[in-house]
Length: 252
Image 1: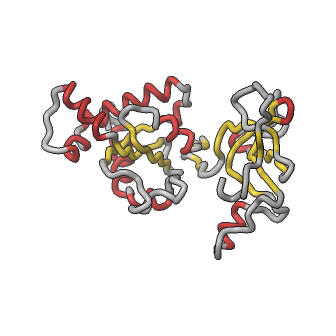
Image 2 (image 1 turned 45 degrees about the vertical axis):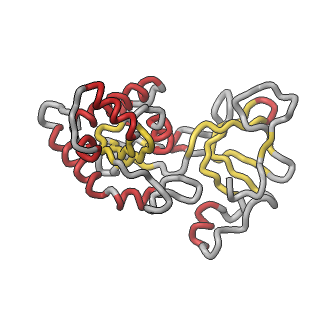
Image 3 (image 1 turned 90 degrees about the vertical axis):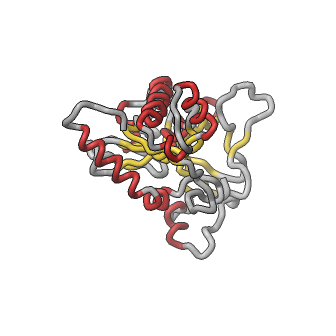
């Protein structure tokens, strides 16, 4: 990560066990901090779990002229809170298993880690990029899908669907239903929980980029900006979901 000046852990060349990031480097300390809202604690068995925090001379001093954001990631004891969830394996090996940052709660109390869900949906053939959003006053998630143009064209050709341009195809309910069905299949395959499924989506042609302000320099989604950018689409999806609660279900 960019907030450390080198790696915080390293695998031994003689270690044949895969699936971990090695043991802590001598230049830093690493600890796992409980994240009770995600059911990760240092008391977990057989492996302690929690947010990965690192301290030492390799940790940066702070964000340039941004004391507020600096205090959000570095606590009073000098620990950098990475936002990654890890567990300790035998031999002091560290394994990254989840993300803490950007979690939010839905109206019925379920905690959502959107980046995990977005990484799942990124495996879908139609999905180039994905932004998952949940309103704390609503029970369901919605998604903005920057669609793979070529895959959408191939699907339309296979289905015999005629259209003037891709923009028209993106608003075709049949396209939305096909993409949502593919997303649901992938979500079931990796065993996402029911409340982690997006219940509605909007297809867009525009990619998320640095230029339109939707990505950070490290190519992560700027969530507040994305929420504002797609405010109308998000509101429309929730309106349709609300309307469908008391009527026969239709693709949204």
